[in-house]
Image (cartoon, rainbow, N blue to C red; front, side, top):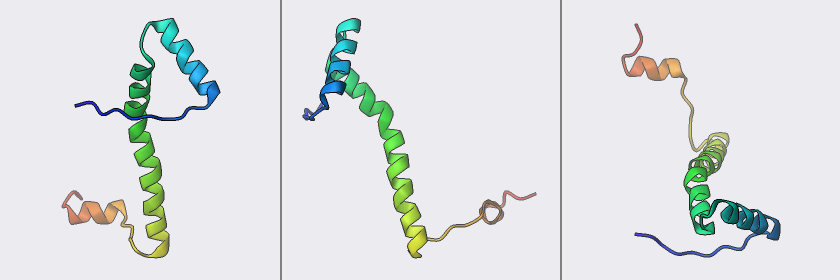
Length: 77
């Protein structure tokens, strides 16, 4: 199922998107979908890592060393 949405673009980005679509014969919607699909992982990594860092700094979360986790899982020789 496809869901429609709308966004406002900076005129410079809009012009670049228009040029790309025109040059390739693909739709602007195609390229926007590609950008979102490929960029979502990066955005999640960036923002969720930032949230976790805040939780670590505030004491809401704790970090464990790789050695501790490996030992707990029985992965140490």
